[in-house]
Amino acid sequence: MKLPQFSDIISASEVLKGFAHRTPVLTSRMIDDIFSCNLYFKCENFQRAGAFKFRGAFNSVSNLDDQSAAKGVATHSSGNFAQALALAAKMRNIPAYIVMPETAPKAKVNAVKGYGANITFCKPTLEARESTLDNVVAETGAVFLHPYDNFHVIAGQGTSAFELLTDFPDIDTIIAPVGGGGLISGTATAAKAMRHDINVLAGEPQGADDAYRSFTTGEFVASVNPNTIADGLLTSLGKLTFPIIREKVDSVITVPDEITIEIMKLIFERMKLVIEPSSAVAVAAIYSQKEALKDRKIGIIISGGNLDLDNLPWQNNIVK
Image 1 (cartoon, rainbow, N blue to C red):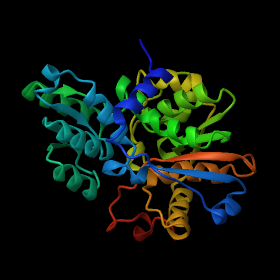
Image 2 (spheres, one colour):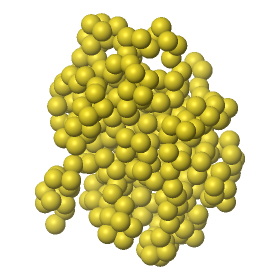
Image 3 (tube, rainbow, N blue to C red):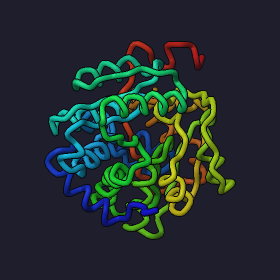
Image 4 (cartoon, one colour):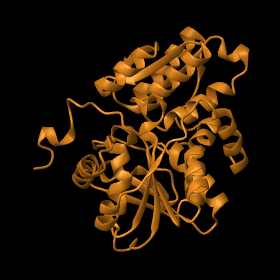
């Protein structure tokens, strides 16, 4: 099984030039004081389609030959990869077929429709996603591009960390959220190649802690009935992402939704950044370990900013 290497991330960065945004890195002295460290926010919420997912989607679509691409591409996604693949397919002028759980945020569904993709809804389970997708692929002949467990997707996702560490080479710790593991796999691959002594962390919701359990036991643990507001972090690790995480990630930090929501509000209020719960998980993980990480220079991959503004977590009395 071939795993993406740093050279593949470099190649992906060349593919993305002129198509993906080189997203800004923001800092805040006030947030640094609260966290007792220096934080560098790599703002993928400003990426095309509102999340880092565009990097992997565009790289994977670009690596398809014309014959394979002609019938279109297909995937299953709760929202961010759905939007990213729909946009990448539109840019290549090929069809996109997206399977989405019926519980997917309305804003993400509308965005996918806006990019012209064909949506099929399913029950909010991995089994339902995969079986529905199988039917769609059989009917259309489209190429299935896995939302995270795909060689070119992982390489594309790693370009965010590559940019961050190119701009700020003295960062000593880097963190990204983990769901299926595409982002953290690419992040860890880039980071460990660029700085062998860097500390690579993953943030995960306590209510969807399959990556933490897989990482700590060394045995794959599936995500079963996850319960978290971080809708982008509900899926299990993949055959490519799990071994990369085991080899290159130093620690997986889990945080309760209550802290994630409070950190999400803090970043909204103090930095004026719209970040979705999945992004806030990584920031909350740093906050939960702020004593251990005191005075560190920490890069945070802010994975996305796609959320339903009519259904914000603190509007539902989740936290009082």
